[in-house]
Image (tube, rainbow, N blue to C red):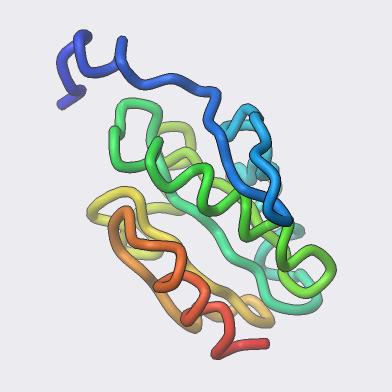
Length: 135
């Protein structure tokens, strides 16, 4: 069930983030590339190197909280780890295949195999610890 419209009204797609000590404004929904049913195989399962996928939904308030964190990490780990977002409303079959029962969920894949999953809008340090295990 979608949250009340009043909650959506206070969620802004533009967030501020810190990059190299400087405040930067960006559109967190477009900062990380999108993966879909059509591109899942080539971008995630057949990728060389580790891949982090954020499973999210447009109506999810906690997803809006974690978007800028994932975007910041994508800049920090550029060249070491690929980052993608998967909208579970648009690609429910992939979400079901990986047992996604709540969003946000982030998963790390290596050679097409799920290696780790982090549930919820967690602090940056939690995601960093998960990433570091696989680099």
